[in-house]
Image (cartoon, rainbow, N blue to C red; front, side):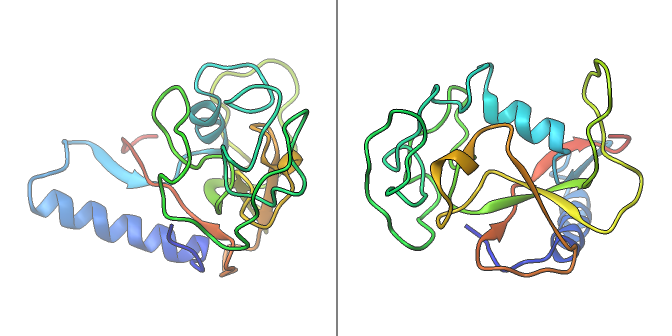
Length: 174
Protein backbone atom coordinates (compact mmCIF):
# COMPACT_ATOMS: atom_id res chain seq x y z
CA UNK A 1 0.00 0.00 0.00
CA UNK A 2 0.96 3.62 -0.37
CA UNK A 3 1.87 5.06 3.01
CA UNK A 4 3.53 8.15 4.48
CA UNK A 5 1.30 10.46 2.44
CA UNK A 6 -0.63 13.33 3.93
CA UNK A 7 -4.30 14.02 3.21
CA UNK A 8 -3.10 17.10 1.33
CA UNK A 9 -0.72 14.97 -0.79
CA UNK A 10 -3.52 12.58 -1.65
CA UNK A 11 -5.94 15.31 -2.70
CA UNK A 12 -3.28 16.85 -4.98
CA UNK A 13 -2.68 13.40 -6.47
CA UNK A 14 -6.43 12.97 -7.07
CA UNK A 15 -6.62 16.32 -8.87
CA UNK A 16 -3.63 15.48 -11.07
CA UNK A 17 -4.91 11.96 -11.83
CA UNK A 18 -8.35 13.33 -12.72
CA UNK A 19 -6.83 15.86 -15.14
CA UNK A 20 -4.49 13.27 -16.68
CA UNK A 21 -7.29 10.77 -17.23
CA UNK A 22 -9.67 13.43 -18.60
CA UNK A 23 -7.02 14.63 -21.05
CA UNK A 24 -6.43 11.05 -22.20
CA UNK A 25 -10.18 10.45 -22.65
CA UNK A 26 -10.21 7.60 -20.13
CA UNK A 27 -12.42 9.20 -17.49
CA UNK A 28 -16.20 9.18 -17.86
CA UNK A 29 -17.63 12.67 -18.30
CA UNK A 30 -18.54 14.32 -15.00
CA UNK A 31 -16.35 12.04 -12.87
CA UNK A 32 -13.38 12.76 -10.60
CA UNK A 33 -10.94 10.77 -8.50
CA UNK A 34 -11.12 11.66 -4.84
CA UNK A 35 -11.23 10.08 -1.40
CA UNK A 36 -14.41 8.41 -0.18
CA UNK A 37 -16.43 10.16 2.50
CA UNK A 38 -16.37 8.44 5.86
CA UNK A 39 -19.86 7.06 5.21
CA UNK A 40 -18.86 5.73 1.78
CA UNK A 41 -15.77 4.10 3.27
CA UNK A 42 -17.80 2.34 5.96
CA UNK A 43 -20.43 1.23 3.44
CA UNK A 44 -17.71 -0.37 1.28
CA UNK A 45 -16.05 -1.91 4.33
CA UNK A 46 -19.24 -3.48 5.63
CA UNK A 47 -20.17 -4.94 2.21
CA UNK A 48 -23.78 -5.42 3.26
CA UNK A 49 -23.02 -6.82 6.71
CA UNK A 50 -24.23 -5.54 10.07
CA UNK A 51 -21.53 -7.29 12.11
CA UNK A 52 -18.51 -5.72 13.77
CA UNK A 53 -16.32 -6.56 10.76
CA UNK A 54 -17.10 -7.60 7.21
CA UNK A 55 -15.98 -11.10 8.26
CA UNK A 56 -18.35 -11.36 11.26
CA UNK A 57 -18.09 -10.74 14.99
CA UNK A 58 -14.44 -11.89 15.20
CA UNK A 59 -11.29 -10.98 13.33
CA UNK A 60 -8.06 -12.96 13.04
CA UNK A 61 -4.72 -11.74 11.74
CA UNK A 62 -5.12 -14.42 9.08
CA UNK A 63 -8.01 -12.29 7.72
CA UNK A 64 -6.36 -8.86 8.06
CA UNK A 65 -2.94 -7.41 8.77
CA UNK A 66 -2.78 -6.34 12.43
CA UNK A 67 -1.10 -7.39 15.67
CA UNK A 68 -2.23 -11.03 15.80
CA UNK A 69 -1.46 -11.23 19.53
CA UNK A 70 -4.67 -9.26 20.03
CA UNK A 71 -7.43 -10.72 17.83
CA UNK A 72 -10.99 -9.42 17.96
CA UNK A 73 -13.83 -11.47 19.44
CA UNK A 74 -13.26 -15.20 19.75
CA UNK A 75 -10.65 -15.42 16.98
CA UNK A 76 -7.44 -17.26 17.82
CA UNK A 77 -4.12 -15.49 18.11
CA UNK A 78 -2.27 -15.36 14.83
CA UNK A 79 0.80 -13.96 13.10
CA UNK A 80 2.06 -10.42 13.57
CA UNK A 81 4.08 -9.14 10.61
CA UNK A 82 5.05 -5.86 12.25
CA UNK A 83 4.84 -4.06 8.87
CA UNK A 84 2.56 -3.48 5.91
CA UNK A 85 1.76 -6.37 3.58
CA UNK A 86 1.31 -6.39 -0.18
CA UNK A 87 -2.21 -5.25 -1.09
CA UNK A 88 -4.47 -8.26 -1.61
CA UNK A 89 -2.50 -10.58 0.71
CA UNK A 90 -5.62 -11.10 2.82
CA UNK A 91 -9.13 -12.23 1.84
CA UNK A 92 -11.48 -9.73 0.19
CA UNK A 93 -14.82 -8.81 1.74
CA UNK A 94 -18.07 -9.94 0.07
CA UNK A 95 -17.85 -7.09 -2.46
CA UNK A 96 -14.28 -7.85 -3.48
CA UNK A 97 -12.50 -5.11 -1.52
CA UNK A 98 -9.19 -6.08 0.08
CA UNK A 99 -7.54 -4.64 3.18
CA UNK A 100 -10.30 -2.37 4.46
CA UNK A 101 -9.54 -3.91 7.86
CA UNK A 102 -5.88 -3.38 8.75
CA UNK A 103 -2.67 -2.91 6.79
CA UNK A 104 -2.84 0.93 6.77
CA UNK A 105 -5.31 3.48 8.04
CA UNK A 106 -7.08 5.08 5.07
CA UNK A 107 -7.74 8.78 4.70
CA UNK A 108 -11.35 9.84 4.16
CA UNK A 109 -12.49 13.11 2.63
CA UNK A 110 -14.35 14.31 5.74
CA UNK A 111 -13.25 16.54 8.56
CA UNK A 112 -13.43 14.74 11.89
CA UNK A 113 -16.41 15.70 14.03
CA UNK A 114 -19.39 14.36 15.92
CA UNK A 115 -21.85 12.20 14.09
CA UNK A 116 -25.15 13.89 13.16
CA UNK A 117 -28.06 13.15 15.46
CA UNK A 118 -31.03 11.22 14.15
CA UNK A 119 -31.29 9.08 11.07
CA UNK A 120 -29.28 10.17 8.03
CA UNK A 121 -28.53 8.71 4.62
CA UNK A 122 -25.01 9.04 3.15
CA UNK A 123 -23.92 11.80 5.58
CA UNK A 124 -20.99 14.12 4.95
CA UNK A 125 -18.80 15.35 7.79
CA UNK A 126 -18.49 18.93 9.08
CA UNK A 127 -17.65 21.69 6.58
CA UNK A 128 -14.42 22.56 8.41
CA UNK A 129 -12.14 21.41 11.17
CA UNK A 130 -8.56 20.69 12.14
CA UNK A 131 -8.37 16.89 11.74
CA UNK A 132 -9.30 14.55 8.87
CA UNK A 133 -10.97 11.17 9.34
CA UNK A 134 -9.02 7.96 8.85
CA UNK A 135 -10.55 4.48 8.90
CA UNK A 136 -9.63 0.81 8.95
CA UNK A 137 -6.80 0.42 11.44
CA UNK A 138 -3.31 -0.70 10.55
CA UNK A 139 -0.68 -3.40 10.87
CA UNK A 140 0.34 -2.26 14.38
CA UNK A 141 -3.19 -2.06 15.86
CA UNK A 142 -5.19 -4.54 17.93
CA UNK A 143 -8.10 -6.36 16.29
CA UNK A 144 -10.75 -4.33 18.15
CA UNK A 145 -9.55 -1.15 16.39
CA UNK A 146 -10.20 -2.73 12.99
CA UNK A 147 -13.99 -2.90 13.47
CA UNK A 148 -15.99 -1.46 10.56
CA UNK A 149 -17.36 1.39 12.69
CA UNK A 150 -14.09 2.42 14.36
CA UNK A 151 -12.85 5.87 13.40
CA UNK A 152 -9.76 7.94 14.03
CA UNK A 153 -8.25 11.22 12.86
CA UNK A 154 -4.99 12.81 11.80
CA UNK A 155 -3.90 16.33 10.94
CA UNK A 156 -4.21 16.83 7.16
CA UNK A 157 -0.46 17.38 6.81
CA UNK A 158 0.55 14.25 8.79
CA UNK A 159 2.66 11.66 6.95
CA UNK A 160 2.77 8.45 8.97
CA UNK A 161 4.09 4.98 8.16
CA UNK A 162 0.69 3.53 9.02
CA UNK A 163 -1.62 5.85 7.03
CA UNK A 164 -2.45 5.45 3.33
CA UNK A 165 -5.44 5.89 1.07
CA UNK A 166 -7.97 4.30 -1.26
CA UNK A 167 -9.20 6.12 -4.36
CA UNK A 168 -12.85 6.61 -5.16
CA UNK A 169 -14.28 7.49 -8.56
CA UNK A 170 -17.26 9.80 -8.07
CA UNK A 171 -19.42 12.28 -9.91
CA UNK A 172 -18.09 15.84 -9.76
CA UNK A 173 -20.97 16.99 -7.55
CA UNK A 174 -20.25 14.31 -4.92
